[in-house]
Length: 421
View 1 (cartoon, rainbow, N blue to C red):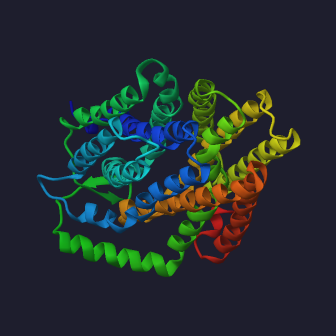
View 2 (cartoon, rainbow, N blue to C red):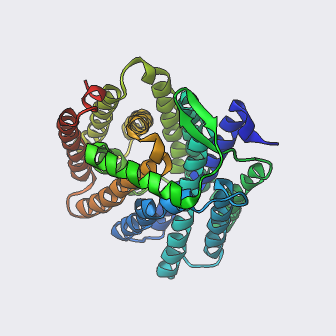
C-alpha cells in the first residue's frame, strides 16, 4: 500500500513514523532517568547524560544537507529512514545486558550512537514530509505527527515504568525495539515522488543533478542569512523554550525526590501529562489560523511561563511536600507545553524558506535541541545548589527575557515585523 499517494495515507504514515520516533524519546527522557534515579545514580550525572545525548540532535544540521543531496532513483528519503531506524534498534540492544549503574559509561556510549541514528531519522522524516505534502495540508500533518510522537512518548515514557512491574526492564527494552522497527513495514510499499514548490502548491519535476541542487541551495542560504530570518529563528529556537525543555527533563527525578513511587509516576506521566500535551496541541491547531503566528507564539510563551512559574512557587510555598497540588499544576503545565510546541513549530515553519525546507527547518530543530541541552545541564547544576523551585524560576526568567529580545529583533528585520504585530 502506497500511503504517500493520498492525504489520509500521509497522515497515517507520518503519524506512525513520529510514533516510532517518540517511543525511544519517552524511554530515554523519562523512563530511563527515573530508573537511574531509583538506582541512586546522582541527579547531576543523570542530567549530564541527558545533555550529552542532545548533542547529535543539536548538531544534526551539519549532515542534514547531505541527506538532501545524496539521493537518487534507488535511494531516497524513505531509505534513509529505514537505515536510521535499523541503527536505532541495534544500538538499543546492549541495554539488555549492560548494568545501568556499574557500566554507566558503556550505556552512555550506546545511547549516544542511538541518538545519532535517531537524529538522522528525524531529518529524513521531516524531509520526506516536506517533499511529499502541500503547504495547505502541513498544519494537519503536523498535528498528526505531534500526536504520534506524544503517544509514543507516553507508551514508552511513563508506560515503560508501569510495564517494568510485569515484564522487567529487559522486556521493556524489547518492546521498545519492536516499536522502533514496526514502522519500517509501512515504507515498503511507498513510492517517493519528486516535487518542487510552485505558486499554488506542488508540481512534479525530474531530479536535478546533485551539483545543481547544491548550487541552488547555497544561493538561497546566502540570501536568507543576509535577510536575517535564519538568525531570528535560531535565536528563538535556542532560547525561548528553555523553561519547559528543562522542566521536562527533570520531572521524573523531581517526583522521585518528592517521594512519589515509580508506578505512580508512570501512571501520571503517561496519562495526565501526555494527555495534557495532546490536548494543548490539538487546541493550538484549531486556533492557530485565527491569529498570525507571531502573536500566537507570544501568547503561548506567556501562558507557558506563567504555568511553570506557578508550579515552582507552589512547590516552594509547601516546602517540597508531595501532594495532589503538584500533579494538578503539572497537568496544567503539560497543556501549555503542547500549545507552546505547536505555536513554536508553526512560527518556525512560516519563517522557513521553501527552497531550504529540510536543511533550514532541521537547523531550527537542532537549535531547539541545543536549548534542551544547555537548559537541562543548567537546571541540574542549579538544582544541586539551590533546589528545584529556584532552578525552575531561573529558567522561566530566561525564557521570558529571550522572548522579549526576540520581539525587538523581529521588529527590526524587514519582512518579519508583521509576524509579531
